[in-house]
Length: 597
Image (tube, rainbow, N blue to C red; front, side, top):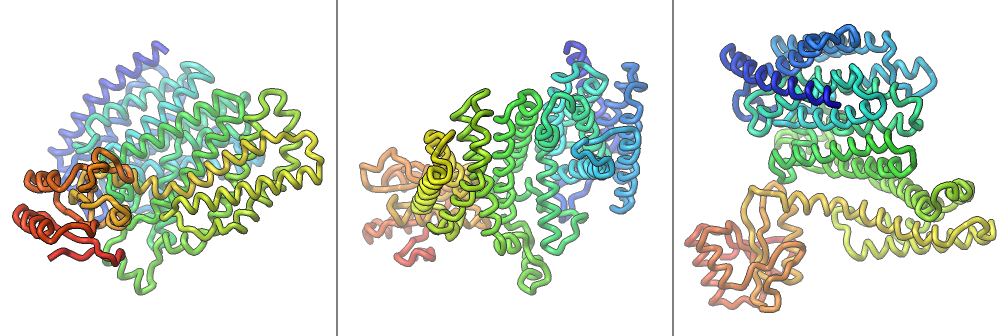
């Protein structure tokens, strides 16, 4: 471990120096990324950051006297770096890059690098090729916002390094990965928002190829001690965010009639910004998700029991729901919207909404299985679980089938996720209780409840209510999170903290294109002072509102109370007009906001 720490410090220092030199050289030679319509940056930015990353890793590792221990990895990494550098300088055709990447992946497979997911060597060869090529390009696609690719690679690589060290110690692969992490960390110092240098394809392809191949090394090290599930799930968890982003972008573009190879502002990071998050917040969200995936990967490799697997399954389902939410975010331009109206392209959301009920049913079947299995795991521990596992398998099809029928019977699939509320939750509670009781009665009838536990069904019902309610409320939770993280947009105050105000909050904040930022409520009722409504504070009474307007602390005021006097309304109009504050009033027709005056 001490040696790895020294290597990390040396690599970090070398990377810091080389990145600064590459930035200087790129600016002097004119190798800069110019702002384009399909790119995110707004000013010319130096390229060649990938040169510093690759040089740090390859040269320092060679100076350590270890190149003969990883000849295939070094050769493939150098070839990938060269491919990316050529693309940065002369802009290669996508098919030419793909052919070269397939050839490099073939090199690794030829020398024995494998995923080992299936027994068939033919299928495993194909899967390994897809893994290497896919992840190499996934990191290339992920390089779309300041700090995102390098930061995600640093987080994923750290989790991978922990797995390698725990299984084999300070191997040459661990030393090489340590250098790669140090090089990315040094580059990240200059690449955080606002970035002063980009890594380019030479860096992103280099990072993707190395992490993809080093994951295969970790796989081969843990094959003898890990379960089949962890062998498959662990690498997926480590590199979840690149896989997640690439899948979302590819599917959404193909369904929308766009080329998957073309650039665009429709990545997960761009969609988070479109929700109202800042660039830094969007990158931080994806970093956090990457860290959670990395922790789950470490748990899957370290702990040989089913709890990490259950946590990973729940996390994957949550990520699928998150992807569906992001697919709803409008990222197309007005011109592309015109194509939608003529039927020439179809947004991903349309394709999803057409089949969303089927997706809900599949999701709920998975949640029922997870809840029932978790209930058994919580009720029976250690060897006792093995005794009752047969009862679990025997009753699982019965429980899943009955539960799905009762959910349909109570109308659980008539609601809309975006508007999930208390009465929708009550519907799910009815469905879960009815399904649980019916399952118990049938188990008693069929098996006389022998080798079954009433506690299992109580725990199952509670867990399923939480999972079903959480999945439905997730859309609102994500939306609320985005609105509360928004730091830009018109500062909004709602005058009146009653039922109309609750409707106004949902209506106004759903208009993401207009960019409102909710500050809180104003109410003349003294009993509402210092209280909160829908998570937003009541800021005071009418006097507090006039003070906020006079001090320039608000941009828009919406009146929802119908008890305001004519004199007070005239005073408010004059004050808002004097300070350039927009004033609107929500009338009894709650589907529109009519400007006062």
